[in-house]
Length: 327
Image 1: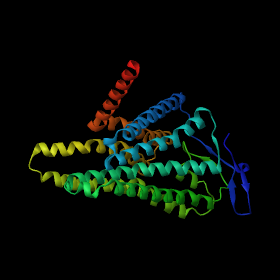
Image 2: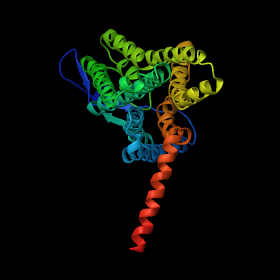
Image 3: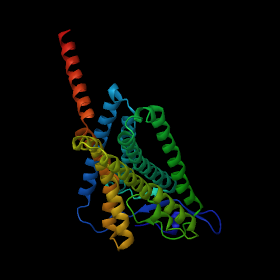
C-alpha cells in the first residue's frame, strides 16, 4: 500500500515535511524480477570493468598523462554513479523495500544527479583534449598539462557539486501534503517536486537550468568541438594522416553516443508524446547504467595504449610468478 498524508509529520499549519516517500517503480509488468537480476549483472560487470581500468591507469606509469587523467576521472564517476544508483534500486524493488526516508531520498537524488553531471562534463573535457591534440598539435603538450587538467577536473567537481546541492536543497522548502508516491524507479527530481502542495516555480526553473547544464549544453559543446576538428582535418593533405587523426577520436565519439543519445531520446519522447511510465522507467534505467558498463570495455578494446598496458601487466605478473617459483 502506498503512503498517504498520515506518513507526514506536520510541523506547523502550512508546512508538511514527509517522514517517508514511496517509490512506485514498474506497474503490471510480469516477470519484472528478471530485469532487476539483469541490473545486478550489469552492476557487477560495471564494477569489474571500471576497477580494472582504474587499476591499469594507476599502475602503468606511461598512462600517467593528461588524457588518461580524464579517462581515470570518467571511470571513477562511472563506478560511483552506478554504486549510487543500482544497489538501492535492487534493494527497493528486488527486496520490496519501497519506502524511503525523506532525508535518504534527498541524498539519493543528490548523488545520482551529481555523478551523472560529472559523467556528462568529463566527456566534454575529453572532447577538449582531442580538439587541442588535433587542432594545435605543436602546442598540445604545453597547454594540456597535468596541472591544467587537474584544475579543470577539480573545478568541474566543485561546480557540479554546488549545482546538485542547490537542486536538491530547494526541495526542503516544499510542503508535501498530498500523495507521497514518487512515480519513478529512484528519487528523481521531477516526480518528487511535483508532489508538493505549495509553489514549485523555483524548483521548475532550477530543474530546467540543471537539465540544460547537464544534458543539453555538453553535447552542443562536443558537436562544436568536432566541427572544428573536421575543419582542421580537411586542411590535412594526406588522407592517411586524416584517418590516423580521426582514429584517435573514435573511442570518445562512441562514448558520447552511448551516453547522450538514450538520455536525449527519452526526454524528447517524454516532451513530444505520451510516453508510458514503464517505457520511461526502462529507458531511464538503461540510460543511467549501460554507459558505465560499456565505457571501460570500449576504452580497453579500442585504445591500443590500454591494451598494451594490460598485456604488459599480465606479462610482468607471469614473470614475477615464475621468478618466485624458481627462488
